[in-house]
Length: 178
Image (cartoon, rainbow, N blue to C red):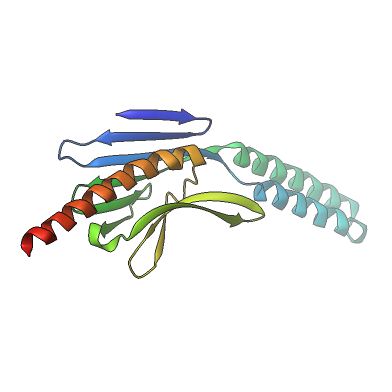
């Protein structure tokens, strides 16, 4: 078992008893900024309405907005753990498993190649690992975790070496069948 920890993410690569390899990446992410923005928007709306409301109602609304803002700020500061894993079955394929229990299996024959790409998401550059099928369909791996480039490179090395071995075995078997 190899385990590497970087700031808020962990990658572990385990060899399972049946010969399979499990690549698991977990990340502890802070909740997004939208919670703070929402509480500030509610507060701003209440301040805009103050000239049109009786002063007691204004005080009550401001107090409730401050309480709401405090609660939302506390919720925002909580972090949550997300984990996704890939189980590589030699000669068979790969199974993607998410924290919520959803899983998807791809047979080795359904995988053309694996690559690390980068793209834009909400005005920032993201790096992702993708399986490409022979029909040119792309499946993003570790989409919920969004690990860093060094973590993705470690996962890529394991997956790519498996794919190369699997394709060479399949090519050898084809030649022997002739």
